[in-house]
Length: 117
Image 1: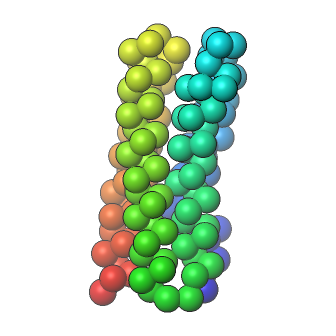
Image 2: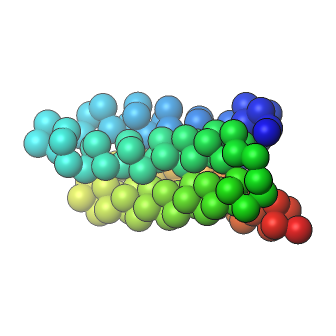
């Protein structure tokens, strides 16, 4: 088992989640139980699954949870795009957050490759 807090990818995912929560505070009230909730859950799922994977005993289990984290990052990336096109996020904000998601995906890909070796 591994301390997830020592992983840079977890730290970046956690930071992204905090940013998404901050940015979505100003979303329209009608989106509270829809898009706001969905993007928050997708984004937090990245860090959650990294943490859960680090609590698993086998490499196969750990890799599985990293794959789920990657899929949640994909979902987050799309939802950020949607929020921008709906004009809930400023383009500048989207560019910063999207860059962070891409970095997380790259790091997760490298981590999964390392785990599977």
